Length: 333
Ligand code: KG4
Ligand code: ZN
Image 1 (cartoon, rainbow, N blue to C red):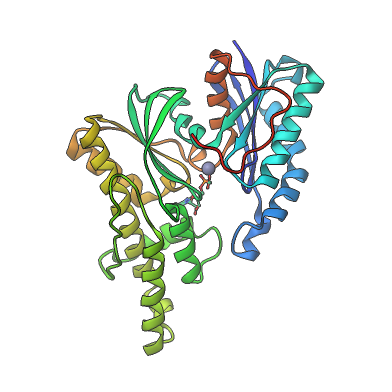
Image 2 (cartoon, rainbow, N blue to C red):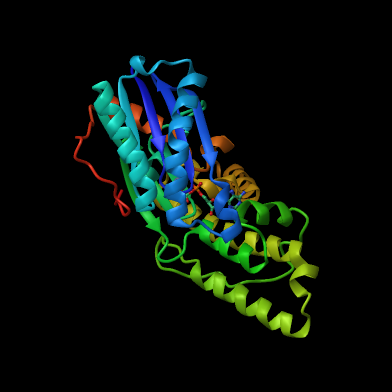
């Protein structure tokens, strides 16, 4: 019955969770507000904020779980991928705590953890399942054969879906992070108001950089005729961009399901919090006879709960690391 403390610090959320025997007892996330005024994550400010937040966040996770640090069996942390300075805080803190308490360490791959967030709550998908993992830095279709056996079937060749949301939202003057704001405004808009380019990429891969450019050229042209174009059409612009991104994501996911014959499908990562993606995923799932799985909101965006559940499976597989590990900004699955 292992009790594990897990730490996530790969980007701009400082998070800690406690997992006992595969159950998440606490999941504390402190989102760093400092980046809002810069319109995006400033790496150096992110690492400084992690440094300030890590001690109270870990203390709060232990307190909420009513677990004393002496009851821990292992310390887990995200090794990568992510921002190097951000990762370094969680890695150094985790290693120091493990050394101090004489505990083994477990290093976790951030993107695998987004997928394994599906093993936290019931109902859980059975293996094999397909997972569309969509975040601010990644867009992947993953074949999950077992908790620790995954294969990437398709990925973005340029921008991630979350980036496409955030960058277009920024063009519309929305505050960072733009994805959730754009989602909110899109609810009041017409998704068919404007048509944007849907990129064609071979196989199961994705591309979102063309969409960003097509939105930019479109609004620049419209603003020449009407300087208030964005303001007057904001909801429709948001709804149309969202509809395009979701349609692109769903197309390849459907293709992957068809090619593999797998009918257990999941979505994960920050963008899986998007209301339209959740709606379309469920709708197409019903039409195509899939069993669909969507994580709770708290396990969609970055959180240590997903790191903890992944670490639990690594613990069972005796997959421990040594004190010499260092963060990996790039980290293949
Ligand atoms: O997984 P995540 O928290 O961090 C990374 O690992 O990148 O994902 C963050 C991304 C951001 O791009 C954010 O705008 C996007 O997820 N996001 C959303 C929504 N909520 C978060 N995008 C669209 N609609 C949302 N509701
Ligand atoms: Zn993430």
